[in-house]
Length: 333
Ligand code: NAD
Ligand code: UD1
Image (cartoon, rainbow, N blue to C red; front, side, top):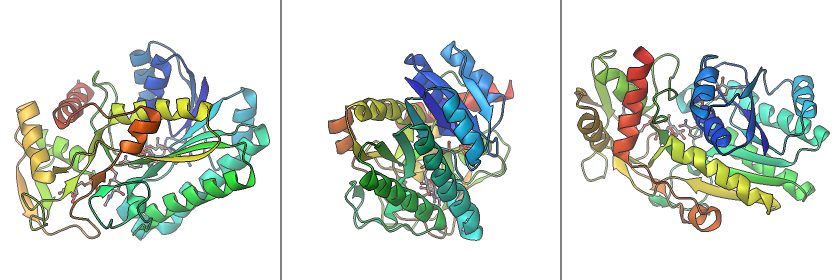
């Protein structure tokens, strides 16, 4: 297939692009480099042994997107471009609605104009808000508790409405749990600009002695060791899920929605221990107050993706830690 990947130089997009190329697809990446680096392109080419096309552009630029989409006959778009920090979205909600919602609307209009009707959209487990129980299925109520989560839910609704108005569209909404780790080559991975928000990038920086100590946000949750539990999924497993979703869309019209997680919950303290075991590096930590908006525990019920996509995550927390660390070490070389 010929695939356009928006946000393809970012953390998840770069891994998806690699897996698509290794699978024999042609990939064009559109990215405005707001939260990524141009050099990632070369890394993608090295791993895949092929040449990915890159266009520096903003998905909110309708004229530009129409030009890109009409220049080549794309079979599908994988849409990842957007802003992703829950905390930043509380401080600056308009940025999130503008980029995530308006960006998707412009993309959909450009796709409509050029007759491309197959889309995979990167949603998030955050659309569930505070879930009623820990193992989340796709039918759980959707009540995001942040502008970021709301922007994802709005896009989901827009996609549903689009399909309701035109049944010839094929759309997969994938709700990611906690993507972590890196490509096993160590060439691409999570390289957040500024102070990391997320756990594993912060753990890596503490292990690397770039930061003194990890703050563990809360040890009084109702969990086995008091720290919060999440469903960490290896980014390569997540990327492979996108290939399976494209396969599904080849013979499906309408909207399909899947959770992409492992179904396994891991606590923050367990992550620290696993990271130390996997890398041999110490991760000094202190217990800090709970982080506003954090939930005690949740993980995916991904049985629908297993049944309908034939997809199941296979990489464990040890591999996630080893690969995240290898990416750090190689980045320093
Ligand atoms: P990322 O920031 O690494 O990648 C996003 C990419 O999109 C970046 O390269 C950025 O430069 C680009 N971009 C942003 N706005 C753009 C625009 N208007 N036009 C063109 N390019 C633009 O983030 P990621 O972790 O790879 O996440 C990818 C997608 O997956 C996002 O939509 C995010 O909301 C979603 N998601 C991520 C996570 C996670 O934990 N990483 C979890 C759930 C969902
Ligand atoms: C975050 C996003 C969520 C997104 C998800 C996908 C926030 C609040 N939520 O979820 O919208 O869908 O990523 O990956 O940003 N922790 C620490 N110390 C740290 C960092 C994190 O103890 O320095 C803890 C957190 O309290 C949490 C766990 O580690 O319990 C995971 O945190 P994080 O990686 O930020 O992910 P989430 O908050 O689950």
